[in-house]
Length: 261
Image 1 (tube, one colour):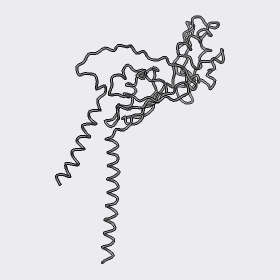
Image 2 (tube, one colour):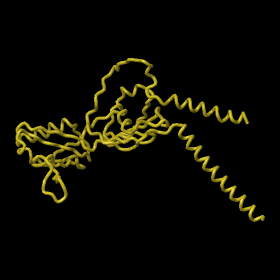
Image 3 (cartoon, one colour):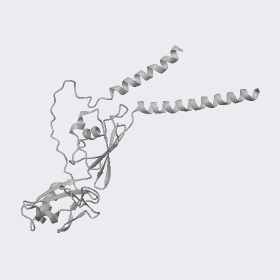
């Protein structure tokens, strides 16, 4: 009996030690270390793609002059009321399958493939015949990343400022659970119409200087379960099967004893 108990307890303790060792991030950074990175990582340029929803606001010194170049949504104070909110909301411009948006007065403008600064510059040039010193503010309204798998709050998250690191994305998702496999997180990225698959090791500090530290629009992170979670799931299934079989055996035994009487 003691030997059997040891056979059960020892592997469990070893598995626990092995899994706990892999839970902390960036384990190759020494304790109490004060290090500076050799490289400076800048956020990537956000390029406009087909299907993007763009918020574009045009302003000038004379507000009435810029009104025709904005698409306000009429927002009433209450149903049936004729009083509008003082702060207007603006309709998004959807980039169509040709990479174009339809802009008031100006018409069709090709924006797909351009970054935000390039689109702003292009719009300003096209507005100059109509407005003096126009100010253009552009934001991508549907900049999203998705985090799935062994995290506390899996889901798709909208990024208001169009800029997010891989650590911030995990923060949105409530961090990995203790069962998340930190050494082999999968990043799926759309790249020029093709899928790119990258395996990322959160146990290594090299991630902090990697080209995948900043996420791109529509990136997907998938955190696999570690061996402990898989074994626990298998044990739960085994326990369920044993419970069902035990119940069946007990039921059959009761029925047999009743028929014998």
